[in-house]
Length: 296
Image 1: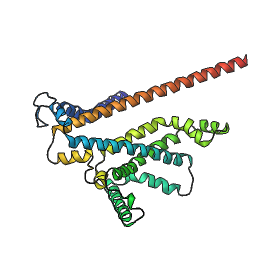
Image 2 (image 1 turned 90 degrees about the vertical axis):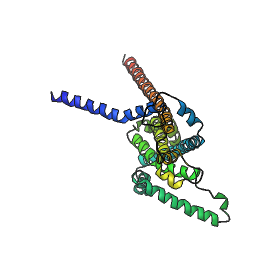
Image 3 (image 1 turned 135 degrees about the vertical axis):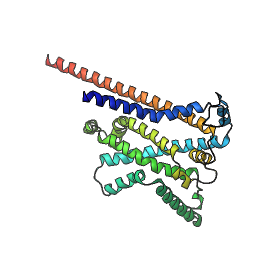
Image 4 (image 1 turned 180 degrees about the vertical axis):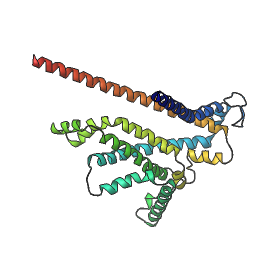
C-alpha cells in the first residue's frame, strides 16, 4: 500500500514539475499571436507582431550576431573540450594534472561577474600592449565579435570537458586496447574507435554550448563593444522599458527551432544506439553459430 502511494506521489510531482516548466512556454507562444500591444491582455488572434519582428533590423542583427557567436564558440569549445576531456580521462597522471583539472573546471563555479571582469581586464591589457608595440600593432582588435567569442569559448569549454570526460571514463577501453595490440596507432584509434563512441556526448556538448552562448548576458556585457550587442543584451534593454509583444514572437521562434533540433538529434541518437545494439546482437549470434559449428 505504501509502495502504491509513493508511486502516485512521484507521478504527481513529475506532472507538477513538467507543468511548472512548460505551461509558461505554452502561454508565451499563445500570446505571441495576441492582437493587443499589452502582452498580458488578450485582444484577439493576430500575426501582426511576426511581421513587425521581420522588419525590426535591431533585433534581427542582434539575433544573427548571437547565432554566429554561438556556433563558432561551440565548435571551438567542443574541439578544446574533447582534447581536455581525453587528456584528463586517459592521461590520468601527468605533471600539473590537478592544477589543469581545476583550471578547466573553474569557469563553471566562478561567478559570471568575476569571469567577465577578469576577461575584460586581460583584454584591455592586451590591447594596450598591442597599441604600444610597433611590430604587433597590426594584431590590435576592438571589443566585439572576437572578444565575445573568446569569453563564450572559455565558458562552454568547461561544461563540455566534464561531459566528454564522464563519457570517456565510463567507456570500455577493451576496444582501444585490442586495436593497440593489433598495431593501430593512437591517432587512428582515436578517430576510428574512440571518436565514434563519444559522438553522442560531443553532440550533447555542442548543443549545450550553443544554449549557454545564446543565454549569456553577464560575460557578454563586459566583453562587447559599440555595435556588437547580442540578442540577450537587446532583450534586456527592451524589458527595462516595458514588455514588448515582439519578444514573445522572438521567444516562440527560438523555442520552435531549439525544440525541433533537440527532437531531431535525440531521434538520430536513439536510432544510432538501436543500430549498434542490433549489430552487436548479430555479431554475437554469428560468433555463437561459428562456435557451434567448430564444436560439431
